[in-house]
Image 1 (cartoon, rainbow, N blue to C red):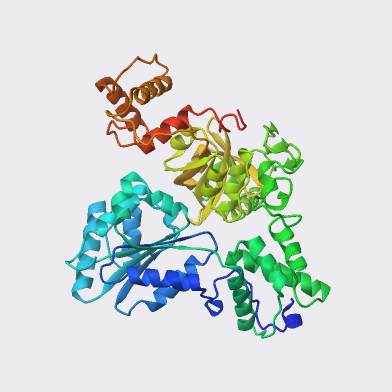
Image 2: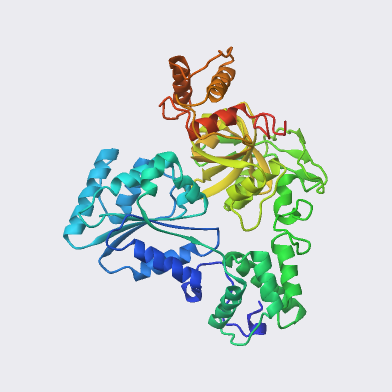
Length: 550
């Protein structure tokens, strides 16, 4: 629309990954050098992390182009898999044939044989996993076992893990310490500096055919301020600013026009010195989730799934607080039964549209923050933003029972009928029905539908104790041992004993708790066990059953 006005032959700020617009800043080149070094003769695991939109995929594609011709590459884009599914996907990527319903051992043997044959033929094998922060701990451990196959000088399988900052936290887990020790190179990709933002914008404009400057110095500073140096957000802001300039027939683009673009794209009324998205001014992005609208009318629908089973969806009408309030209050909810005469095609379309608005996990996290009366923080991951505001995040793999057992609102990782990922916020529960927030809609879904679309991963926010210990075992203090006895008794609705040391009876009770919650029954209250205990004992924050704050 505006290309002719600006003398452009193409749209320079599309968020599509066009290789013609490849821009490698000094940080990207440094990241590429680290990855290349990590894939040297010794091999092992290589780690690349960075915030959403910082260019991790760009670096990985550059790396692929630089790999020698004797390299076989497997690329996994959706890592929400079990151990068996991961090995099967690896076989598919490498062209390894396997029979129907293979076992874990059969797939492992086939991959091992392939790696040995490749090595004998002078070929290397590289596995690249994108969005690796979604990998389960047991899947990462299976990957480590695969890399056990080695010669005296190198690993036969080299693995590149690419993910958001949460991946670093995942690898700090005690059960993954062996894998963490095998990481031969790691790099965290930071956002662009203000100087690099100017170079980035100029580069994309030149590729699109404009050699003259189009954004002045004030606009570059505004771009860096509002985007935090994230290339994807820079593209969105530049695109909107160019449209505004075209509408006003104005050249060059100045800081005021970028500020206006930021207010439209990021939902900010005016630039703020703080990087927290205020609830009162973030209506465009966060308002739908934290109660910044006075009335939200939710349609009452029934949607029919691909397996011909009916999905019961109920409408929601919520009366919320004023946007200037600091905390989210409980809302009044009315339910309306859907009419039997509603058209299946129409209701299915409503459901599919709601799912399509939920492809961005940040949207789901914004909804979860809203339930806690908090807001995301620009430039920080969800977990980092939670910690900054006195909360913590906890990711778990499980099923319906795992989710409702913890009884916390959660970001749930879902898959549609085409196995494409989308993300929802589990808001409330009534029996075998769960209220999901999809984009700007809240829908009641039944347990059967949820189970068939749930990938098995969910993440909650919670408020930890002010003081935490890392482990309670037989060498713990009397006070810590008594706290553990009191906590287990409280969960069992039994009378706690007065204990002075970590005895066998306490160990058995602890192991029983660990078994019933899918933890390693080692009789030691390590970090995972203590977090789970605190999650059940905490009285802070919203719950699924109540759908509001205590």
